[in-house]
Image 1 (tube, helix red, strand yellow):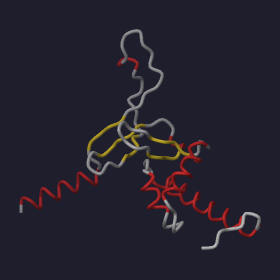
Image 2 (cartoon, helix red, strand yellow):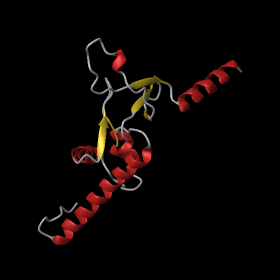
Image 3 (tube, helix red, strand yellow):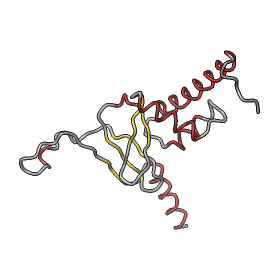
Image 4 (cartoon, one colour):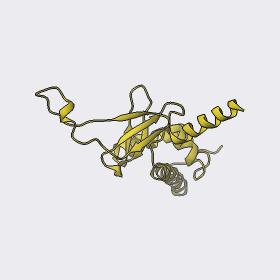
Length: 149
């Protein structure tokens, strides 16, 4: 394998084109997902647009995109971060207990001051719902129906 020469303008151009294609593929996947994705999910989906994309490159780009405030990390207790576009505004999440995927919940219970102890002020809140996603509910129903036969 030939190592690119950093002093060669053609070599830098190819390197930048690859970098842009990879970053673009990662952003496209995140923007189109409609839910927070793990780095592995991002890598798998982005490889269609950027063949050869590796997980280390995905992690490096995710870090840079978070620092640039183009995407946000979604951190749930006991889980590795997932990533989503920042244009969602205030929202919450649902995590499937079976497949472990995380989904956006755009409704909010609103003012939670009444739940805080007397004399406390709520500055912000995070809410995560847990259960089974639609696909996993359907799969369980199919499994139950197959066992009854």
